[in-house]
Amino acid sequence: MNNQINTGQSDEGRSRNAIQADRQNRDSPPTPAEIVQDLLQQIQMRRLYPGERLKEQELAAQYNASRARVREALRLLESKGVVVIEPMRGASVSPMSSEAIFESVEIATSLFAAAAQRASKRITVDELLELGKRIEELDALAGTSVAPDRFFRVTLRLGQLVLDAANAPRLASLLADVRAGWPNILGATGFTTPPLRRRAVRNWRVLHAALASGNGRKAQSMAIQLHDDVRAEVERVGW
Image 1 (cartoon, rainbow, N blue to C red):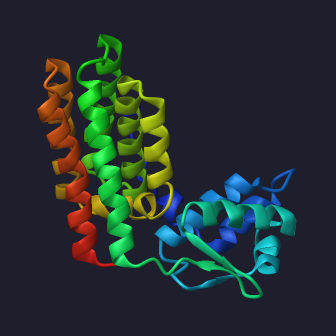
Image 2: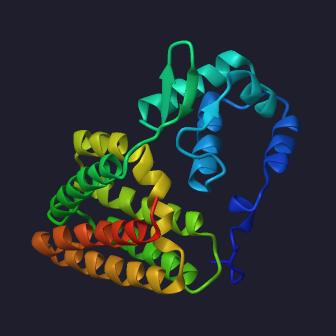
C-alpha cells in the first residue's frame, strides 16, 4: 500500500466549474450513468437540495451533453427514488421525508444482516483473506482527514465482499435497489470524524471474526450494528 494517504479532497472539494472543465476536456460527452453519479454526489454534498428543480436544458449545458442523455439520467434517478418527474413541471430532487428515508435504511439493514448470516456458512478462505485486506485499508484511512465519501466507498466494497460470499444474487439485487437512492447518499454522513471511523473498523473486525468462525448470529448482529451506527449519526446531524 502506498504510504501516502490520499485525503480524497479532490472527490468532494471540486467546484461545479471544475466538474464542467472535466466534461469539456473529454473527447465524448458523459454517459447517463456518469451524469447520475455526479448528480448523486452533488445531492450528497448538499449542492442540490430536496425540492430543487433540475432543468434539462441547464444540465445539458453543464455536462456538454444532449438533452436526451440528461433525460435518461433523470429517469434513472427517478427509478432510485432520488428525483421526481412531474408532467409540465419537469424534474426536481425528491422531497423525501425522514420517515421514508429511514424506512429504506431499515430495509437495507435487514437485507444486509440476512446476507451476513448466510455468508457465515459459505465464505471461503480466500474471501476471508480479501475481506481482511479491505478492513486493513479501512483502518489506514480511519485516523486521516480523508473525505467521508471515500471512507464510505471502502465500506461499500466490504459490504459487496460479504454479499459475494453469501452467494445470493436475488438478495444482492434487492439490496442494491434499496441502497441506490437516499441510503447511499446519506451513508457518508456516518463517517465524518475519526472516532466514528474507528468504531466502524472495530465493528468490521468483529464481523470478520464472526464470519471466520461461522457464527451466523454474531455476523447478523454486527451487520445490523454497522447500519445502526450510521443511522444514529444521520439522525443526530439531521437531514
